[in-house]
Image 1 (cartoon, rainbow, N blue to C red):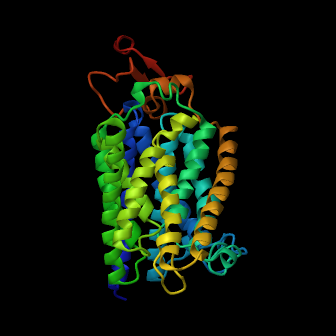
Image 2 (image 1 turned 120 degrees about the vertical axis):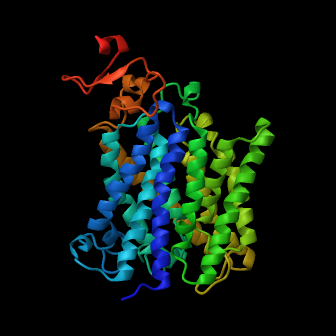
Image 3 (image 1 turned 90 degrees about the vertical axis):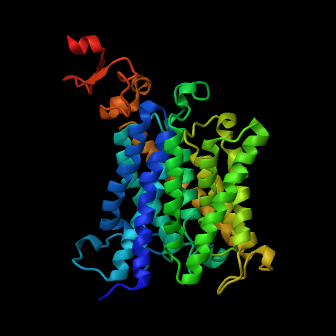
Length: 433
């Protein structure tokens, strides 16, 4: 059987979405300290490895429709991994679904940069994808609790979430906030200048690749050429407007716009347009992106005022802009088959109610479940590295390597394995002796 053009498009989109996670590795890696860059990038790459396996063995079945457990999860005993040959559409759906799950959990890592044990992260990823991401994906996209005939959806109305405002961004943002609170602040948080991003070109490269991959992220579920074209345009203009909004805030507040602000604005706009990309006009997408850029630029500073160490602004960008994009649909969603549209189109309060309920359900469910998972790991294997490891650098202490060599490690020594411990630092004189 030959592939159809729509099937080829879906496969291309899946590849674009997969590219987003290495892009995130560059984006996050550049924002960390030089002695944490490899660990940060490894957290993204390990998410690819772990979630890909989980998704084939049970994640896809748990998140999908069909026979399940009362709308709470899909079939937890799925056998996708045991089937020799699947239908073409189902194979593509497995692949695309895996890439969405991968990027979602990878986003969380930015909230705990510079201080999380790599082993604890490797334990957290498959548990969180299984117990948090897969059920929520089933509720929103698989006909579960938030679907049109689900327990919540049938009462509150069907929420619109085309590509992941709730499932991906609010979900990851809440999880990041919970883990940041559990793991605690970095040593010298808000005072240590070394915690500033060490490689802005990495950040800009990551933002560019994220923007490129996002055309597959938003366009992957389009059903017609016309819809795909409009989604493409809105995925272009929303982050463009958000970039302008972010650097405008910086200009008015600080006297200058920054490259880091431009990159962060791009991501904020991409996040905001994700749930709304198929249901608003291009001009509305510009307004939505502008609002997301301005509000997220202001929101990232709240961590210093409120005292939570969200290292790479997962909360300020993904949670805040995810909520903006999700709730905005209650105002500016176009009337369509099965929906009356937002308030500005005379649709009444029904769509707004559905968007608010979906947002609240996501925040509460993710918050509770991530707290349980995070505390269980933190109180058993431990989620945070020791103060010695944090000072020396996670790259050196957790991975026995460094991202840069400039006539030495910049940490006072070379890592040498030690038979009695996980390793210790030796000076260059000790090594040569």
